[in-house]
Every structure is written in C-alpha cells, then in structure tokens.
Amino acid sequence: MVIAAAERGDWILRQTTSNPYSDTRAVRLTDNDFEHGGLQLNSYARPAKLFTAHESLFVSEVGVLRTASLLRITEEVVSVIQRRN
Image (tube, rainbow, N blue to C red; front, side, top):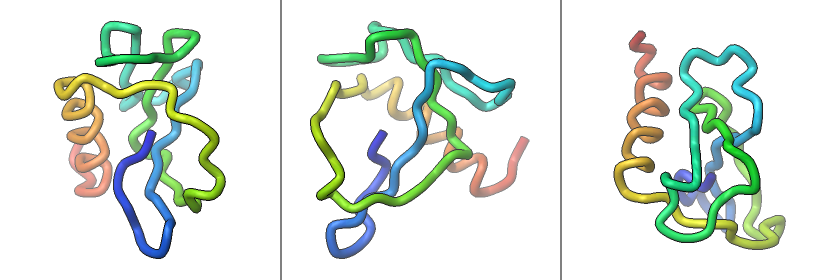
C-alpha cells in the first residue's frame, strides 16, 4: 500500500500480506474495505512494516481503499511511529 510520496520518484509503502504473522497491529482487509478493486485473498495491512520503492517498480494498481479503512491503517502507522500501545 502506498503511504506517501518521498522524493525523486520514491514512495513510502506498507506491507500487505495474506498472513498476519502474529502481528498484533495487523489490520485485516477484505473486499468490503475497497472502494474499487481489491485483493485476491483476505489480507492484512502490517503498519510496522514500512519501506521505500521507486515508482519505476510499480506494475499496476489493484484497488483503492475506502476512506474509513485507509484512516484505520494510517492511525496504526502513526501509532507505531509514536510508539503508543
């Protein structure tokens, strides 16, 4: 999931996986969380798994999250950064 633009074509991303890996902060995503598009399986947004990538590596957009779902995940990312429990 794309979180924010960094610089010079780089983007801050967050891992999405089909397994929560005992991650207590993992946010479950289903088809209902998407405005359009979606994932092939119920998946988990992992707020503590952030990384950067250049936009040249992007292949396609699979969907767009509903505002409420995006806010829920964003709050968890901020929580990780602020180190709140």
